[in-house]
Image 1 (spheres, one colour):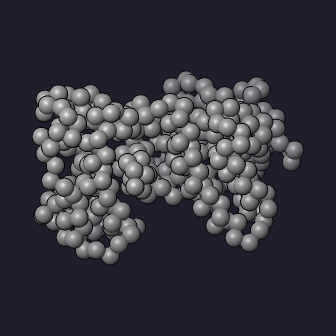
Image 2 (tube, one colour):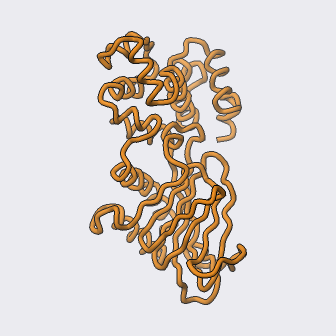
Image 3 (tube, one colour):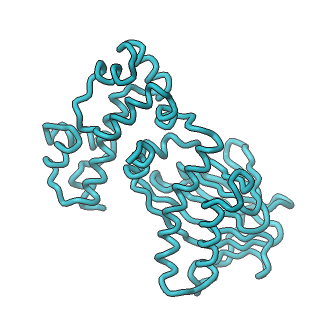
Length: 301
């Protein structure tokens, strides 16, 4: 498993395709701030619209474009015509997906909307920008991302057996392809992703991700980077924004969350697997990160 695979795995990403939007005429739709751990996405199948953010930024979207909001930022979607006040669409049930409709059945805009649900302390999602757009022209027309979107569209159009389950499974795979496309366009330019793109620091970050329970030392990490202790620390903090220990602790807690979610191991065993000899020290640090004790988290998952 490479480092990016590890970060995706630790994020415990689950996808859901939630509804289809079909809008006509002049319209606006307000999307509030989502809870941490939920990243909405929008796929424009036909037509165009614009997205406005509270800071005044405007993002145009056209057929084939995908918008992802890693931290669930509030946004308002508008028709390309006159600016109008946000309204509530009509909801039509009965198909694979609920349809939200404004205007008649021949829409100017046809769009699929869903969300990625993830570990709310995910280092990967924290490294992504407030919003990212994958323009249709930025990926090969015959590449895997447009192909997957077409499969998702086909399943949404046809009310076939198992379509609901399949749509969510395909939505989960969609995240990785969106991430690939984003990195191909913009590179690994922030936070933990920037570490992976650094020739020397990347070696240390990959080693920490591969074995977070190891008793790492500054000297050991500096040796992996072929740097002095002082140079290593300065470079690491400059690129990552935090010290190696902060990232190591977060990786350990993400792994602990995953073990709480997907295993029957006791808390003392989980503590040891993520590098803590003391269950009390582990539980204290876990609560600092997640706001709740590990036992309580397990009961609510």
